[in-house]
Amino acid sequence: MKLTHASGYSIRVITASTSDAVPLCEVVIDGTGTGKVLQGAVFEAALKWNDEVLLFLTDDVPFEDTLNIYLLDQHLHVADYARMYFMYSTGILSDVDLTEADTVRFNFLGKKRWTLKLFAEKKFCIPILSEALGVHRSLGLYRRFQLSPSR
Image 1 (tube, rainbow, N blue to C red):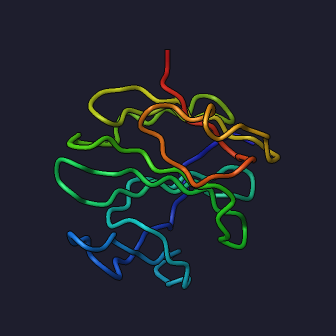
Image 2 (image 1 turned 60 degrees about the vertical axis):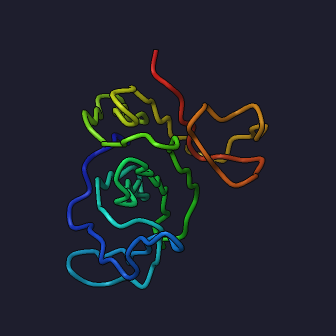
């Protein structure tokens, strides 16, 4: 199924970003809180893919912004998660391209172009070798999407 913009999704900030704490927000669908708490303070985009949604949230920290990317299943459980940041880099999400059915291209961290490829099933990966510079994830052997710089 093709990626499309998911209408009705937004967030409500629960905890703002401070020097000691990351921002937290609640996912809101059609104006109703879901109880699902994620890291982020600014809603950037929501994309529908099959029965899942891809959320892009930033932390709203000037000159060190972080892009949090969540793949949520139909029950709003996190199927996969990645963070993108570089120290002292301004991050602005822009030029989101959905021309391919399972791929999102976008600019972040300056004007650097990125490709996010979605997988229908978990895909085996080697954590140390699988992530591009600027992409941060928890250790795990399986991924539902891959982030890489576009060529």
